[in-house]
Image 1: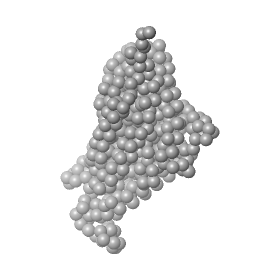
Image 2: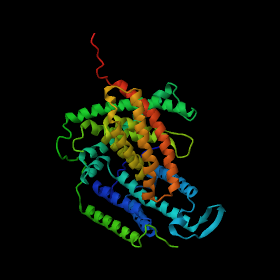
Image 3: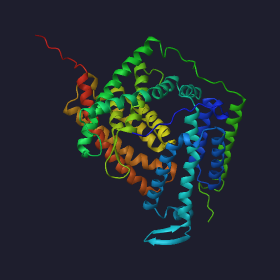
Image 4: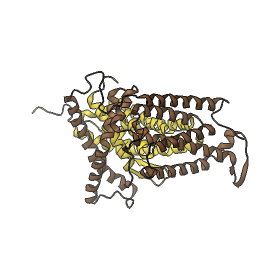
Length: 275
Length: 182
């Protein structure tokens, strides 16, 4: 249970001072660009931009290190899995085969495969700083306001804000229940057989879920009493108005998306083929 | 969307938070790589049946997105979409199971499990791999094998834990026509 969750990190930086809505839109544009393209040149350019923005945000690597370890482990596993299942994927995509050396059967190492997997990894490295930054530089309450601002119904935006608000509470409840049940001798560790473990887990999640259902009643009564949802619009305490910097960032974001798509699809393929 | 009740809105918010906690802390590895018993989907099925398709879809979507973003720093959209799909369709098809009336006997258990198995099979065996190929251009056989393992383990998990949850939930409701004249 040593795992932790990312959360907002307070700091004074140009990235923090942008409105949440701007960051959300940029994040969406940026992920779309990175998702659509497989062009190495575009990906490298985006990566440089990501790193520059990351430095500007004054967030230290150390503060998000625990997440990076997860991501690197996941990327490594994913790359191995891709190779095991499809060692010739790169050859198929780039239509040529420059063998580096042979292993066994269809498992040889080709430049094309290495290049393809390099591109996949690069895609993650482009998106990850953007997503991380969005999470650690946007205050949860402001996040709901930004969702509403980009057109999401405010009731749904409020649900998201409720979720963010109650994650720590539910995490604490979960730990309390788990410890109470373990004190009664209910073992959920590796030492138990799978079937027994599932049964024991149920005795933890049942109280958790039923206390949650009670909580839903309490909160919705409180909101009902405060006339939530009676009007078409609402205002947000944490909302930041758009400033000049926001417009500049938005326009450059849009520009980057368009240019990267133009370069990517210029030759009619998502992939950049150096071979 | 406009006439969502306050109870549904709160259920979506709190439900998404519980989904995240379950997905993060209560996943039991089965011994097969990359395959865990995901109790979060059992909870999702319960919420979809109790609070309806919109709540189910949004709990799946918001819960899964937040979990990906907060614990990995990036969102795996193709699988997030499957969570939305599972919540939506279990909610739509599970509407006839009137668990609010406190009835969840053999008949309801069978229809609930049929619904969840069919919906999840489509989601994990077909949708997830197709979206993976479309968005991430991953090798086809890899994503189909991943989808197959995830689907089977989720169907079994929801079948066992989801059923236990619904039976327990039904017991907390007052049965309709449960009073008899003496």
